[in-house]
Image 1 (cartoon, rainbow, N blue to C red):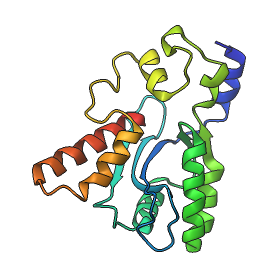
Image 2: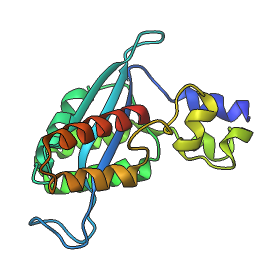
Image 3: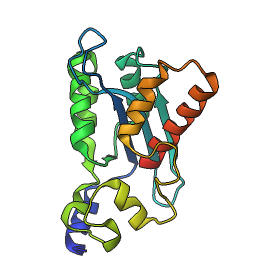
Image 4: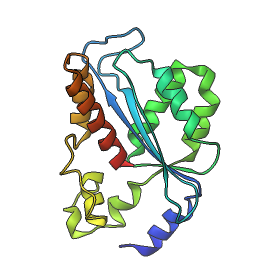
Length: 198
């Protein structure tokens, strides 16, 4: 554990802290105008907001009704919870950042708001790449290894949906599911998974 590097990382984080995660689906053959093969289409977000130290975080979530749901609905819902100040923490900003830039191109009326969000993003993965390593992480800096190494009582193992690939497939397949109970259970599992990420 490189304490000096960790301290430098922590010094850039300002309250309120918005812990943010997206989930997306994609298809080889574009299903909608303006899409391209394998475009990552965001269908879900989770945001935990820590307003100040020691205060229980507030949780906000969005889960599209189906693949037909508009990207604009996702974006405007997200922007409504991110506020105008404080750090936005993501785990692997090489995913969320490009999705936001794609949405900015699609909806230029929100360009300023998205730029402001991008300026506030800090990648929580960064310190775990080389400055914070534990044997329990098994040489990985994936959140699936880091979370249980740091907080053993939290794990993806008990979840019905435990990774992004399964989440994407589960959401996409909801459109082909007629069983209402199956739909309800899958949506609940998706919300639980994304919530654990943040």
